[in-house]
Image 1 (cartoon, helix red, strand yellow):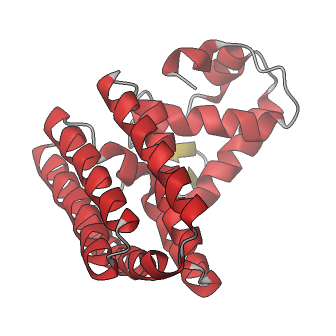
Image 2: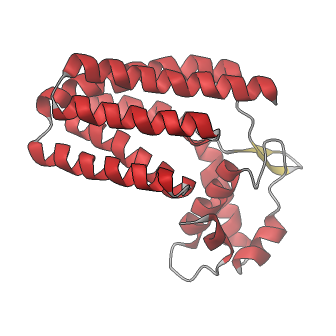
Length: 223
């Protein structure tokens, strides 16, 4: 979904889920900025719906950490501090590194081919400057490597932490330099997976996450 699609009327069922997707994208794209109040009335007009599904969507985003519910003020777009990111990213990097090591050993040939197809699509999204599509494919690749690891316990622990840095992972590639580097890192990760080099794949996965952290902390210092 492109950012332009956010203004089209919602016609499918499960309105609150659809609206939460659109609002999440608005937050990640910066249309709704940290510290701003979520404009419920304006959003009902923008999406062509009543306030009820918008309020349900706000509850979903609050649960995910994208917004904070403040008594007598409504919903506020959440801030994410450098200290919180420095706490979370090394743990997530360790989990994804472990997933890479396991995936190199356990991934089926079909799964590796499928991830290669996604990696090629990632490159195309980068070259066309389609950031939302790039991010969606990026998430699919990381999820695919986790699934290929064949360790449900690892996947569960990762999911709990990853939800807390979902927005940060999107914003880590906002600079042109970091976006290019991230694309090349994904291609190196795919090459290591195809060669089933678990040691290298685990190392590349950990470094990839820590590079995101470095990019984010630089952004927070400049804000």
